Length: 315
Ligand code: CA
Ligand code: CA
Image (cartoon, rainbow, N blue to C red):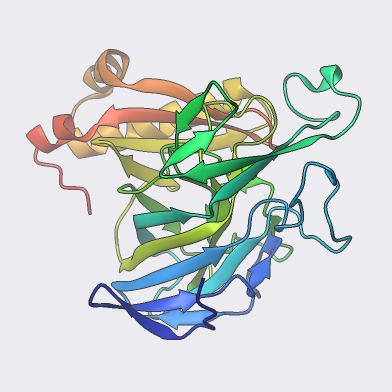
């Protein structure tokens, strides 16, 4: 692809800011350097590396080609002009372009089946015409998603990019995809938005340890919301709104996500606790995002159109 360092590019008539994959971090932190600035409402392209820092290029070398490879690098940070602590960043995902290949690697320490593997093995998969060539028999449709997307968290020490949390991070939610909108907290001036860890395909749970890990270009529109309350990280995807919460257990993450959604639905619909609880039981879906990161992640989905009937408008 075109080598381009944080220059503005015009793609299909639209002016965009471009952050190349030379600008990466393995920690989301208040003092991460801004790789680029944008204004409210601008379009930004993040060129990302894969979660192995693009170091695994052959199944012959599953440990990778470089000893200095970062773990789960994100591209960034993007400083959003005018974003201040307490605001919310609205990030609309316009496009996810995939590299023509992806990689998966086994782990003998993480993942639901890790006892089955006594060493790390990698397989490289071709991605052509939105299809993954799994083997001679099976072709799979891609469903691109962003594994890590987040802002600088609260606190001095930052949060490694392998860990999900209130700032977003490694949520590994397959609903964070083209056409969806993620709402993230602004904890420091500029927000410091970063993203990476694209998966060409992943099932809910990410049970093996990874998705089909790949690199690419993510195009987003970034806006600053002032004086808006949302239970961030918050997602709009496929006509549904979603709370996404991470904790030491799925039980706790699910409980947190459901309670966040309860308060949101109650405020948006104006219903009583009793009626809100009933609506939640009738219409909300709980789902597992991932069970393999240092914290486990669940989401609770609720149909937006129901809230719109009560006059709610998603910002
Ligand atoms: Ca991930
Ligand atoms: Ca990943």
